[in-house]
Length: 191
Image 1 (spheres, one colour):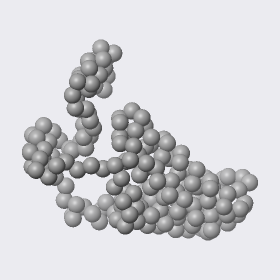
Image 2: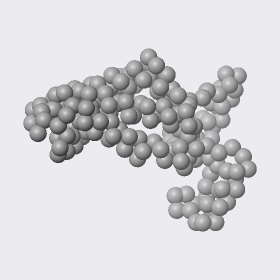
Image 3: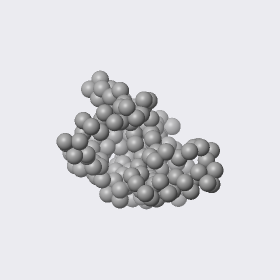
Image 4: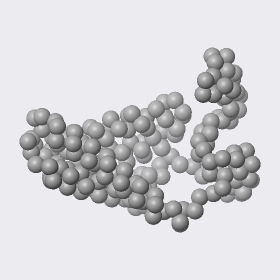
């Protein structure tokens, strides 16, 4: 049992390290992210601060009745979305102190990676018939594909997230589980 916990922890470290590489050393973590024109940044910031008094994830244009909208309200929203700008906005009108919060953010991300790796380890330990190293790593990789399809693909399908962004998320997610799998499959005892 101790080897299972060790495998999960070490796999989480590998997953976290891959995330750092994907975001800081290579552009995978930044794929599909666009920046506004520099000369419009101040004006956009002022509008966001004025239009969105609270931090949140906002849908534009506004859908009346949301989240219990009627069919007619959905249709009216569809007309507005076709006629003008449409998007999803993650807004922090009061700003975010990334210098102050970075340590906390890294800690949360690290713990999330360890939790994902532990769950992957428990699933791999329960999988019957996966004896070879490659088959065990492949199992972990497939879990990464499933995680991507469940969480990221709908953003492309329903919300129109850019294909390059979704591709970057696919690469990051699948390789995170693969990196964890390379370690887990080595440390976890075979059944």
